[in-house]
Amino acid sequence: MEKSKQPSIREALKNSGVRQTPIGGQAVMEGVMMRGKKIMAVSVRAPDGNIKTFQSDIVNLAEKYPILNWPIVRGVVSFISSLAIGYKIITQSSEVAMEGLEEEEEGKFEAFLRSKLGDRFNDFLMTATVILGVAFSIGLFMLLPVGLGQLVKPLIGDNRYILSVIEGVLRIGILVGYMLLLTRVEELRRVFGYHGAEHKTINCFEHGEPLTVENVRKHSRLHKRCGTSFLFLVMLIALAVFMFVPSSNFVTRLISRVLLVPIIAGISYEVLKWAGRNDNPLVNAISFPGMCLQKITTDEPDDDMIKTAISALRAVLRFEPEEKGIIALTASAERSLSAAGIDDARKEARALLTRAADMRLADVLLAQPEDALSDEQAKRYEKFVSRRVKREPMAYIVGVKEFYRLEFEVTPDVLIPRPETEMLVELASGLADVGKVLELCTGSGCVAVSLAKEKPLLYITAADISEKALRVARRNAQKHNVNVLFAQSDLFTQLPPVVRYDMIIANPPYIRSGDISTLAPDIKDYEPKIALDGGLDGSAVVFGIIRQAKSFLTPGGVLLVEIGPDQSDDVLALASRVYDHCEIKKDLAGLDRVAVAYMSATVKAG
Image (cartoon, rainbow, N blue to C red):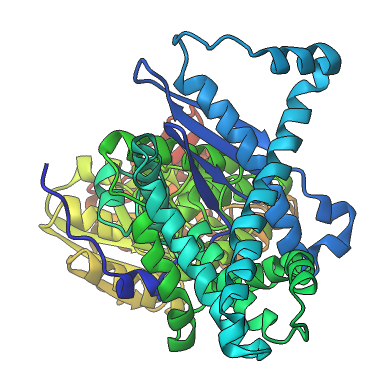
């Protein structure tokens, strides 16, 4: 497999365009630990090749004791916590990585301790290991340089500044030598590979790319917030701090080095966090040496290592999703919409997201825990959801509505197209291929434009009382590239009385004035009242169209009017007196929906 070109240290230092995340990690035996704010997940590759993942909660003592979250103090707490967690996960990963292998026989001393401590044996072992680890580190990196510094003291006298610099250089040299020595241990080479996989996976996530092996591989195996960089900062800051400790006495120097370790660790933690959030020449200069050391403690991982790291990160994100993650945002939106009384909150949450983020629904449904929106997309989505929670119709929020397989622009100046109104287009399409058509109360123009799209030989005029509505209708006609003549008119009032039409179509207001206040807030509070209010009994506009249309229809012409389901008897009675034949068509729900009236060659007086 051809390896992708790896970013340089300079490229790895850049923070521009990088998602800020609190997630960190650690390599373990045949696996990776990923740690969020509340959840820690460890993925380990077992001897059979399968990846086993286990999660555990992170106890945040700072929530109970706020002092532990103070600057410097939190660094000390994090350092101690990392040591304890490190031992725990190394133990867990070892158990998984060595499944099926023959266990070593327990030693006499270990058996003695287990018999005395019982269930507390593991806790004792972990505590002892942490203490010994800290003691070893202090002895190697803090006390040994002091001892070696004493050898050169006769040459420099009591100048504590020069002595501190020499100790600091020795300390850094011991650290680098120790790391190089570790690379000679064959068993650790794979751990370094998992360390590289951990960094690459976090870098991929922070750059907002899907967590695939191909995407992860092209990212740097170096990271600003790595523990290796932390160790170098400890050495560098120790050098600076110890220069100001006023002591040239050997014993006092030894004691001060031990006592100041927590302070140095706390300062280093704050510097590392600051460096991880910023991108400037000073930060990069401070971070550069630590990134160079990571070249020693990380190796390029193989695909299995990357898959293991991805598994651990996804486990954390599954239980602790990013604030701007698609899954987290849609879940939060669904809860908000449901609380606001939206019936199908999940469907609407997803639909709003597709519009806010310009995504396909399939991409939303298949989103992984790591998939997140940009800041701009997240803000737009939050605004959309906030508007919908106030019961503003979704069509007005996103600015479009589908009708008869076409997408139409809608604004609060027009009635939102309804599925049942598609009957008008279906019926009209079946009645005429050529001729003149007039649509009244066109609103968004959805009926006229859809009909023109279906029957391009029809000459269609669309009228509405509202000039604002006509502007929307004209834009929809232009969008779908159809020829429709638009005219402002209160029904037939402003239309030329000499023009006759082969077909007249209308979706007029037909709701009783007194019933509007009982409608859903989505309708009564947002849609134009003029497109809803049909008068005292709801039939004023419908009856007016039926009476007047006969004067504008050609002999043999047809009138199609959408009506309220409870108006069919009255509409049928009136139309039967004026037209040669009239019938009521039912919609898919079985409700009376459209009145169809036919003119004969001789129009009846009415």
